Length: 72
Image (cartoon, rainbow, N blue to C red; front, side):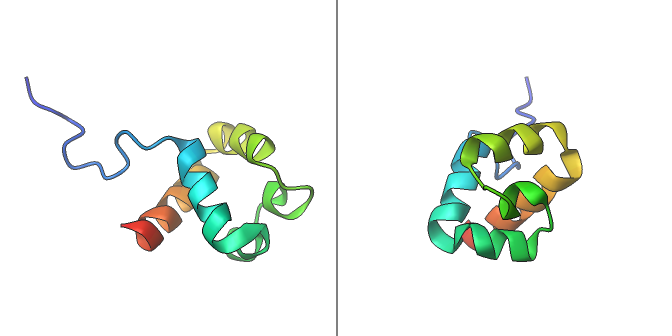
């Protein structure tokens, strides 16, 4: 059986880990400046951001793309 995740750099990396990496390295202010979403700007937290990103594919894609560009 073919491994469909072989070329996916995000395979095995949780959204929580991605967000924590970005926040620890750059901070909420930087994220809010680069990705215009309220959960990064107003009372930012990992949990509230995870809830939003799991329900909002376009925002999640931007966060994942930023992580790949910065950490891969």
